[in-house]
Image 1 (tube, rainbow, N blue to C red):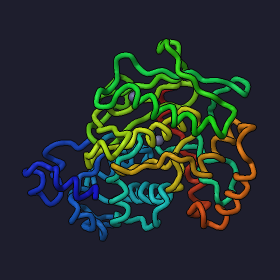
Image 2: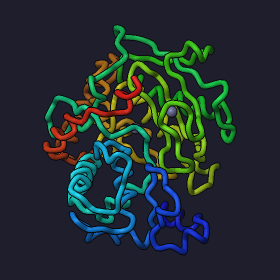
Image 3: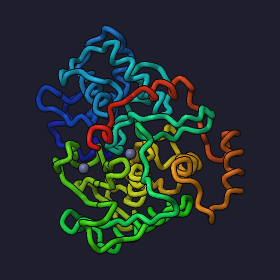
Image 4: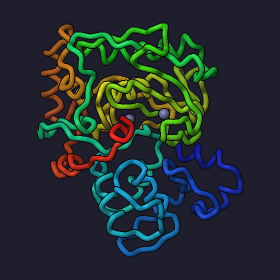
Length: 351
Ligand SMILES: [Zn+2]
Ligand SMILES: [Zn+2]
């Protein structure tokens, strides 16, 4: 549906091209511009192939941490560095690892996502059903548990397409999900300046080195502990009820808020597609309930909420091992080790 939408809303001068001519203008590194019927056109590209459009995939993989550096010069040649990055991406996103720009991989890159880089420190448990990850150095809010974190909304950087009450309630639901599984509670503070978690909606370049990119592409980003900055792209059509917000580009605020709070607490991206911490979210999709992978991840940082039913976790764990109830897909151990060594991340840069 999303790809048809892209086709439908694109201006005529763009639709007329088979592949966007990236020489005419530079696409944000966070967006892949390909028409739906051309998704398969890169399938035969391999090392040594030159093909118009490869450069945008290089920019994308560099932006999200899969290729260390191209010195900002991106050619249309499929080189070995690009292949390595592509394989890492496929492993990290739980895709079939082909080392090719196959249609599944290209389609995945076109889904809107979180702006936080996928470079991480993998958890130290090499148990096959654990896919949650941390930021390098495993930062977390360090004062003794149980503890309360305060949050507040920017008095200036907000959106007006939703009411303040709707935004506040979406975030309350999102915070509650995490608070119900760890000994951390969240309260809204009146004073934005003193709140530990600062939430705001921003357009484009907003001074933290991670500019937003307009409609879709990157939806939001936030920073590892104990920064507390949670930023959403004000250009999105944010929704709390898809029955009311009919736009095909609508993005579920509660799902994104829950994901970003995971980063605020210290979790990085998971390769489990059902996890809240999986990096992408299609328009009009909702993925706001914590998956067992999210719960294990955050509890490994903060311990369990005494009120949390550990029996449920045990049952879920068994189900996850069987790969049935929670649909957990095993990730190769190779991926676990590859990403352990990745060091350059958003949090590392800015903290
Ligand atoms: Zn994220
Ligand atoms: Zn920001």
